[in-house]
Length: 140
Image (cartoon, rainbow, N blue to C red; front, side, top):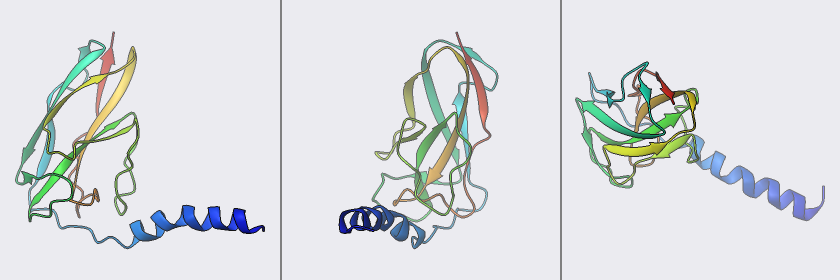
């Protein structure tokens, strides 16, 4: 293996190595996250307002470690991430690290799944995970 390739492989492994060592923050007993809107099975327009509900814990921005708090993540058209690692950040895993509790989402026509997931100050899901039921919307 040449030196450049070895360096690329080692650098690519660094985030995974650190992520595996992050401790998971305990979830407050009875904490729940849910959708205020939209509702499961609802037919919606391309520009969708998504409102997040939360019971039994508070919201704090990413990077701010406060007991019994976390911040929202919206999972679009994906299964659960690995709960032992920080939530990925891409078009399917949308972070609300400023403490937002609603958003506008533009979705193409078709059937889509949405799920909310709380994570701690380091974007790691709580233990046990505080996740909503996965809902389906139909975009016309």
